[in-house]
Image (cartoon, rainbow, N blue to C red; front, side, top):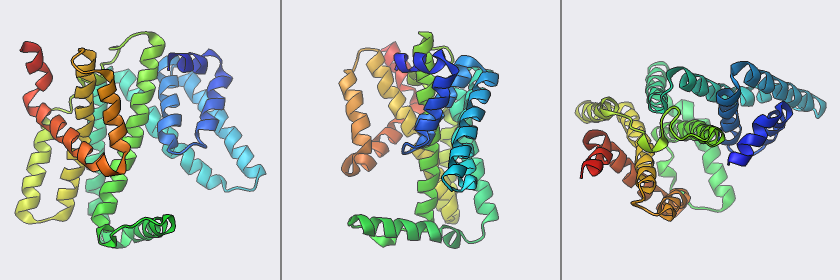
Length: 290
């Protein structure tokens, strides 16, 4: 990763080429977004913005030449690069990895609150998405119980998916920046990440409120934030590997199981539980004392 990071910042046209190419890959929010984060942290806002604008201009021109729709290109560029740039700028200003991740969680909660207050009929809003998902599953020949294709499932899946893509790209870019600088704690380390007791308390209160008043969207928000504690569970794994208490292969195995369909849900739930309880009991500090 260090070699790739050095190549990206060695010459301006290297970064421009990489930004264009990674837009063609699946989930560009991770790959192209990570490059944006690296450029903003390593080279500063002015040069990074210049490189991004040049890459965007080239993509738009090529799209016009081949007869594509430039509007969809602008949406792709904005939805991929702008969030990554904002996260990188926030990190440079606050100098705290943990604070940036915590703010991202708060932004998600506020966005969901606005969505549910504005959209009167979530089922109607998500119907096109659910139809597309059903048709995609049928085309692949896989079986899916369509009873699970509800507006609540769609909302939770989309929000968590986007958050993981953006935060994943941000963390990947930050790790690349650390490798480039040769430091591991410039703005904090991933293995020390802690979403904090305030967010954990919010999950508990919203879950209690959803149980008392039986409002599905409140439970949706609580569930989304609870699953976000998976990232803290992963951070604990990195901490134990960094302390030589676990082999690095164990962490690799966890990452592999997180993408395996048969084990994905179970592993994510376990990591979320570990991360959530760590917010209250601080396992890493207790282990250090022991």
